[in-house]
Length: 91
Image (cartoon, rainbow, N blue to C red):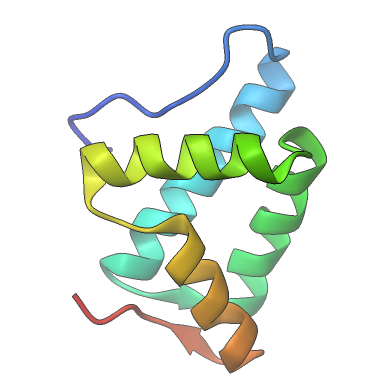
């Protein structure tokens, strides 16, 4: 687990918070040790069920990037380009 605060919204339910926390965790995995594209995109799909607006996704993604250095947008784009296999961002 990281030593920084994951961006979450306190208005979310516990289940929604878990979904978003899983997104940040998988985003870290994609940037650190690598993760399967399918697993990452499955987590992203669940994340989009909680964070429906592009504006909110961008805001949360920027907050996370500020504390972690990892871009949600760039990682999702890379996963979409790969379609399958292993997602490992080049640092």
